[in-house]
Image 1 (cartoon, chains in turn blue, cyan):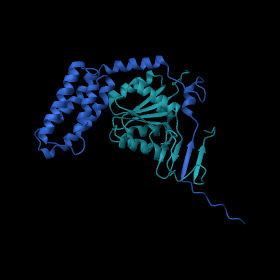
Image 2 (cartoon, chains in turn cyan, yellow):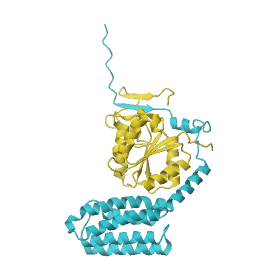
Image 3 (tube, helix red, strand yellow):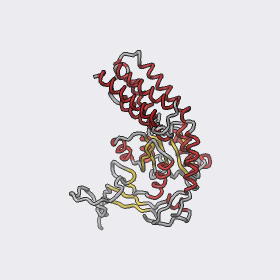
Image 4 (tube, helix red, strand yellow):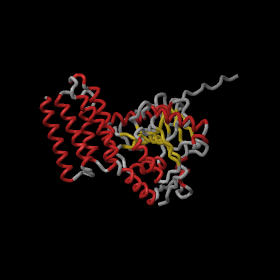
Length: 176
Length: 187
């Protein structure tokens, strides 16, 4: 009687499954091995719907800016070594804002949101000078939304960016 | 070029921000996707996936063809949700394409998602075009799945590039320890 063959020890398994999604979406139009596209009319419709929803963005983002301001007000009277949790809540809000602005035609919100995110991440500084840096960001974002500064914002956008950069430079130097 | 018809496609969209969720839902429907179901966070999405399995009539769909999920959510975030989809014994389709929507751009976050088995990353801020291209990419370029002791997900090597260094891969496809699984119609 021969011993049964030892069971092989499989360490890696590759699953090569057929492309069900392509089959499902081809509708007989896109043949195997070919590439297809989405209908131009569907893309235009999606773009139009998107624009319609995006019109409400300035009103809607006001809630985020209000929450940012509330955190800023809460952080001011606290001792510097007690401020980190507020800074981290601001960091979460900044993360949201940097992900939104560009989608809705306000890339400056993304730029300022990213800068605020970087200023509040991890073991960031929490002195009064750092609080001023927070304020400069909040002011800049409020100006963008109040003024409906879309796109890069032309001269106003450039001015806002310059003011924010000078404030960051000034208070970073003062913070040491 | 021939056009796809997406009206049989069912997508589960998971996003905690009601405004972004509504925007994406509108855009996906306008692109022609037949069914877009939504959940507010990973835990709700998991319950919905279980409902699709146990009571598809109540769920309103028979299966989920693609998941688009935000990363930063609470209490169950996108990475925890992805881990459940790929690894949990109660997950009903561990191969389902999973697109992670995220504002995280740093390399270690991208690597984390890749190692959890993400199919594609969709960066915020996004546009209609980037969303449409990502959906198209998932349809057109499925990758083989790889299962090892510490990874289950789409092949992390997207392309075969010429390499002139030493081959440090321990196993070859012809080795006994490697098994290739095809479904009924082959790859």
